[in-house]
Length: 540
Image (cartoon, rainbow, N blue to C red; front, top):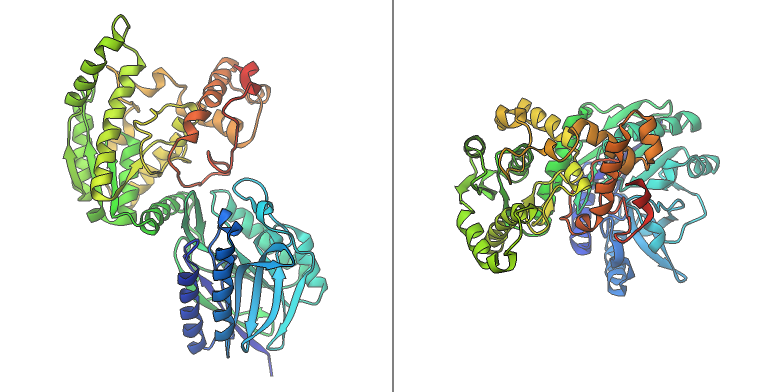
């Protein structure tokens, strides 16, 4: 008679630091899957405390609470086994660990061997690395246990295969970026073909500050063929049935989302979770009639519902009539609360107060920035009064070159487009309209403008966005030098101008709102440059 095994993949959206709440959700999933006949239920990397816990890991009370809830999971492992990720202190060291409990007993504990310490990851700041592969026999199967970064290298996978594993199980907290889905699929399939073993890959889902976890848990058979794919950017708990070591194909696997759909869903989830997990009542934003705020509004409504989103058009003497009309049209189309509030009286009041201090000076960007700061004051007042999060609307291209006003359009709590280059903003706006027309086509077609001066357009100050974004990708995401960028075909003067703008605006980016990461390198944890630095000056 053939051996069989049923493993439930619990792809959950958990909350960092909510140790008791996370444990309750896992206990509920265990009970449900036990009734459904599962033999094992898997939870993601550091699921007990949420990922990444950052410096919570330095707190004794944090570990005491983890230990208490881990004990509850052990006691609940009766006829259903559980694999759960958690921090573990042992002999003065801290490990990124997983425990396998069954029959109320600890059957195995594994310490992650490969600790990522690059980009958004700081695991060597906290954890010691394990050095021993883990293969455990359960219900007649030899299971090889791995954690996230372990499977990005051949050695840990090959070690559990050599130790006699029949099935590879890996729990993960792998954040999304637009390049990663293809990389994951290729890597995991290669492990299966090389070792001749099936692999079950469980990832977490949800937004956590600037990280977005896409889920997309999956199963590959021993030939590297995909047999299961769980939902992208959504929770799902699914049982994987194995006959001997052959995963039985999923009857309704989730489809692979197109690239733009992935990015859009990531941004929606990031907003929903940041607002919800931090207890805001909703969101408010300035709707200018431009494409950045138009896309931000669409994302906010898709994330929160129209009832929880408020938009304000705050015109000034340089605001075009069509900007007001387009903002009003979109707000009405999306059904959000919408108001028009001129900043003219506020601006004039400020200028009156500042007149003695500005005597004898010419008008310049100071007055332009003051317009943006008037708008920031209004939005923050509404945020305070109504407990609504201010969504800023700056994109990655603007953040890179400092095309934004501190305490003005940068004032707010979450920047949805912070890691979205301007060229991608246009693509996402057009994509959103394929789901339902909500962004006026004129907004997409018009030349971008901050409308802080007469007849102003972005290209008065910046290179065309297709050129700018290509240079930024090379300089910011790939660390290319001036010489390398010029060799790529870009004009040297333009390259030097862009690099100078990036370098001198580090101080602005340090004060920018957090925003979701969707590229290979964002402005945040990914890229940590000194504010005060002479390194780049020879490039200017």
